Structure formats: C-alpha cells, structure tokens
Amino acid sequence: MRNIFILLFVCVAHSAHSQQDEFESQFHQIVESEKRANASKINSTLLSTISDYDIIYHRCEWQVDPSVNYISGKITTHFKPFTTGFDTLLFNLSDSLVVDSVLFHGASMSINHSGNTLTSALSSVVPVNTLDSISVYYQGIPASTGFGSFVQSTHNGAPIIWTLSEPYGASDWWPCKNGLTDKADSVDIIVTTPSANRAASNGLLVSEIVSGLNKIYHWKHRYPIATYLICFAVTNYVQYTHNVPFGTSNTTVLNYVYPEDSANAASQTPDIIAIMQLYDTLFGVYPFVNEKYGHAQIGWGGAMEHQTFTFMGGWSFELQAHELAHHWFGNKVTCGSWEDIWLNEGIASYLPGLAWMPFKSGRISNITSQSGGSVWCNDTNDVNRIFDGRLSYAKGAMILHQLRWIIGDSAFFAAINNYLSDTNLAYGFARTSDLKSHFEISSGQNLTWYFNDWFTGEGFPSFQIAWNQTGSTVNLTVNQTQSHVSVPFFELPLPVQFKNQTQDTIIRLSNIFSGETFSVNIPFQADSVKLDPDLWLITANNTVTSVNENDLSQLISVYPNPASSLINISLPSISGTSSSIRLYDVYGRECYSLVTKQTSLIFFETDKLNNGIYFLTINTQNYTATKKIIINH
Image 1 (tube, rainbow, N blue to C red):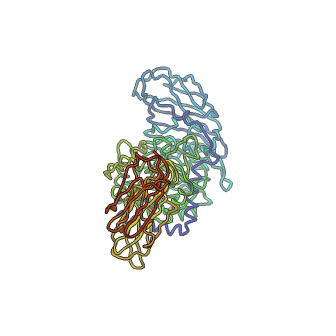
Image 2 (cartoon, helix red, strand yellow; image 1 turned 30 degrees about the vertical axis):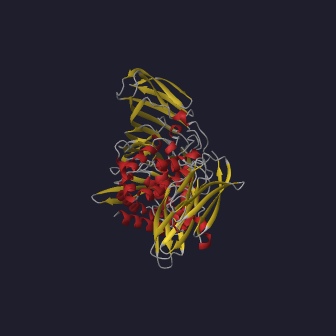
Image 3 (tube, helix red, strand yellow; image 1 turned 90 degrees about the vertical axis):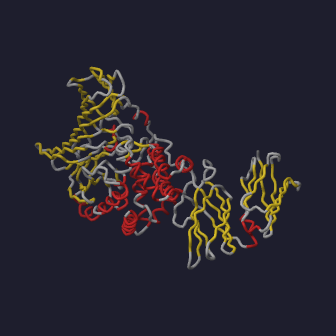
C-alpha cells in the first residue's frame, strides 16, 4: 500500500506542478516566509532560561479588534514547580506591553517587568510538584521585532490581526515561557472581537457567543502544545469544511478564508484530503485526530503550522503538504532546540517530494550552489540562519533521502514511525540524537559516521570515475574531492548505472576511500556509465570517463597523496600476470621496488623516506604509468 500511495502522491504533485520552476518558486516562497522578513540578531538565551517550573495548562482570554493594533488579555497559567523554595514566578514578556496586575490565590502580587521578563513574587512558597495557578492581566501594542509575531493589516479593505510566533515571537504579545523545553498539556483560548469577525485558534470551537456588539469564540485544545504553536487570527472569515476518512474514523478540515478569495481557495483545498490520507498511511493517524485540522488565511505568501490550524498565505499543493507534514514532524514531535530545526523543516520539506525527480534535482542544485554549510544550525540567535532554505530545508530534506538509500526503505520508514511513536518523544521534544538512534536501531548500523559527515559536517563530494570494460568485466576507479575541509572523505554507497541501447543495470559500489578500484561483471557491453541516475546522493560536478586500452593507467589508484606513513596502490584486474612497482626520488634514485601479481591492494611504508616529492612508476603487461607522490610525515 505504501508504494501505491507514494506513486499516487507523486502523480498528483506532478500534475499540480508540471513546471519545475513553479515548484521551485513555491519551495522558496515557503522558506522565505518562514524567515520572518527583516529578521535580525537577538539574544535567544534571554528567552529560554526559565526552567524551574512545568506548565500544565493555559487559559488565554484576549480582546482584539482587527482594525486596531492592540491587545488586552488575561492569561491564567497552571504550573508545578521543579525546585524547592519556589516563591517567584517568571514569564517572558515584551517590555512594550503593560502589566496591569498579577493575581495569585485571588490577591495582587508585587511584580517587576523589565528586560522583557515579568517577575512575580508569590505570597507563599509552592511545594515541589504541587499544582497551582497565577493570572496575568496585561495590555498594549505588541513590539515589532521583525518576526511577524503580531500583525495588524487589511485584505480587500477588511482589517485582520494574526499571530505568528516562531521562533521567539510569542512573548512579543503574551506572557509565556518562550522556549523548547516545556509544552502546556492543554489550553483554552477565548477571543472577544467585534461580531463581524471570526476568530481562528487551536483545537475545537466549543462555543460562539454574541455579547453586545461582540462575539466570544472559545477554542479548546487538549493535546500538549509548544508555546510558539499557540495562535489566533481574526477577520471577516467565511468558513467551509472537508471530511477526511481514515477507515473507521475521520477528521474534519476546517477552512477559514477571505470572502473575496473563497472560490479560489475552495478549488484547491480539497487537495488536503489525499495528502492527509497518504501521511496517515505512512506515519500513522493524524496526531490531533480527536479535534480537527484547519487552514486560516493570512496575508503572507507562505504559511505557519500552528497546531491544528495552519495559517496560510496561499493554497499550492506543496504548501499544503509541507504544513500538514509539520503536524507529525514539528507539532507531535517538536525539535528540542533551534539547532535541530531540520527535524521540523527538513522532514516537512522532504515529504512533498518523496520520489519526484524535479523535486530532488531542485534540492540538490540548491544545496550544492555553495561549498559549505551544515544542517546543524550553529547560530540560533540569527533567525535567517535558523530558517536557511539551503541548509535547514533543502539539505535537511536530502540527507534524509540519502540515508533512505543507504539503509533501505523498510529500515527508513520503520525508524521514522518508531521516532513518532516513542513515548519519550511523542507530543514532546526531540533532538537529532533521538532520530539517529531510531535509524540505528531499525537498520542495525552505527550511523555516527553519517551524521558527522552530513549533519554537522559541511559541503558535499564530487566524484571522478574512470572505467573500462573487457568482456563481461568492468573496471572502475573512483576518486573523490570535497567542497569543504570539514569532511576529509564522504563514505557512501554509490549507485552506478551501466547501459546500452537495449539493456541497463544499476550496481551499488561501497566507496570507502578516494581512488578505490572496483571490478564488476555485467552480462552485456555497456556504452555508457552514469553515477546516481535516480538522484539519491547530494553531489555535484561529477565526471565519468571511458578509458580506452591505451590509457588504462587512469584506473590506477594511489592514496593517500600526500602520504605520511603508508602509500596504498590499487591496480585494476586487467593489469596482467604481474606488475613492477618502483619509487624514485627527484634525483632518480630508486627508493622502493616490488614485483607482484596482486591487483586489489598493495601498500608500503614510507617512515624511512624523507619528506619531499617522489615518482611512482608502475609497469604491467598492459600499460605503464607514472604517479607523482608527496611524502609529508
């Protein structure tokens, strides 16, 4: 069933995006929107230092008029202390907002609101692991930090306010614990707004009450939720729904769209049905199946995966697929640090393509357009670095795809599903080491080398392949260069295609060093050899050269070069009955000699040789070759 669904998904994607440039435009639109226009450096450590209590529940009561850039609210937070002597409660909150009062056990507490932190001295100590609550009353004009955290705008003359907090913007507009260490177990969100509007938010709408000139919308969400995924949007939405059946159960997709765009939206949002059914087949039931999934339109070209209610700036197939994917990868299991943002964005970027060639080609071209850069985010104070489209999105997606080739489909999908269902991770937070562990368990392999090369390491390999065929035997020499010094060699299994006009085959070569030689047997005469025809690998600038009988020396491999203690020589099987190997210094003096019948691997020690330039001559029955060697102890 999996292969059928993948094929169906790819075909739908292909018909929806017949032009690759349109597909690439949509991908970059997603990335750019999530960078938060004009985002700048911030000190994220100030927003993630609250660690002495556990949030259990938020009751968020907000009053907003979308025609006015202003918010007033009451946030009641239920919490349990982690530490003894707990008598002070901290929230992250922008200094641009005014705190009217903080109530604890019905009494007003003394507060200090500075440095974008709200500190409230409690009237009594709360014992460890004891449930208690506090209410914060506040109001003001949220700060404009450039992240798009609280936006007041218009569409077709109608006012709108929406929130968008990733990565650090939640505390711009409400008092919260703004980090990636704690999820509220549940939330109630109550929004009061002029009655011409609808208010979108997380979970299920449990009531919609007229109160004078206003309406009060009450949303209830009963799943754990990260702070940055709590949201609301208010404008004159119209609504419609889709039903997504999953065998014996189903999910409602609730769409809140602009009246002027309702016909256009209604023609495209039905795509979500097949996408959601595919993800259900691949990764298990929709994680918030007891509530809803939804789209709420906002004024951006991209979107934001707020839990159960994605805020959408468009309706493209890839955008819908990307944002829905986040509800498994990002919402159910959330990256535990912005260093690991690829766990959200890389996986969600991979799923809309899975096996579509233009998708893979576009991602590889994007990744290899620059020589360096790691998937690991090395600067979480820089929003542009967190949401780097080439690294967090494209390379994050393709290191998954490449790993799928290495360990196989069964182990790959088993690892992904075990990661999602891991009781230590599901509806909580994960780090890259957690996903790595599941890949290792399912594949039975130690993958430290892979994550060192491709997660923390930078760059990509380029391959230079020389080949020759004699009878049914094809001899190849595979050399590799690297685009960045952080990885001395990318160890990879290489898919190599041998082909003529009527026949072809792909052989997997386990390449473990540069200059490695291979001999393989194929039952036909190949007229071409191609590296990675199905685009499994992150690589660029490759060459494949056919070597004629007068140039067989290209198949000789000598490594490492420069050499420090050993020189390794690999000869192709077509060398003949014996090979004579001699090493000369720059004065023509012979330093080493050997006659051998070996072809697979020959080596000699260089410890007794001085540093400098040497020349290695190799004479066989079929060819003569000279290689320049540098020895540097």
